[in-house]
Length: 150
Image 1 (cartoon, rainbow, N blue to C red):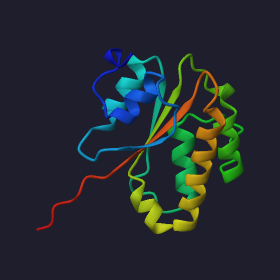
Image 2 (cartoon, rainbow, N blue to C red):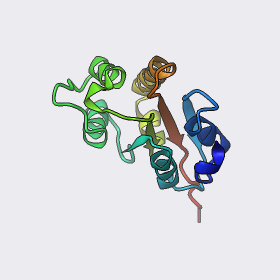
Image 3 (cartoon, rainbow, N blue to C red):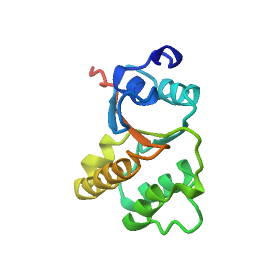
């Protein structure tokens, strides 16, 4: 029932109320990502924010993932280990689903496009893995606000 979900863009509201399977979702630049996390929490989901602002290499990306997602100590800071962590979420129990909000990603994507392609695949594969489970995984890719010139 969407009445129990705070006012958020329709794609996220539909995921949180169970009427649409989780996926990788856009987020409007003019909305704070805290709105998405609050809506997830209110719907019984757990949430994490991964801020990639200023990240320009894989090592920093992996470090940010480890901290923001509170990845287990066995996280090996490589693509396979990240994929393993996101498909074996036994270290991150959840009663509802899980929401990952990724912000500030555009600079990293531009700096290392080949690595960013791997990130997109890892996230999409993890979302797909959890899609038919009771505790799905949704990922929000928050757009940056346009910077005014002048």
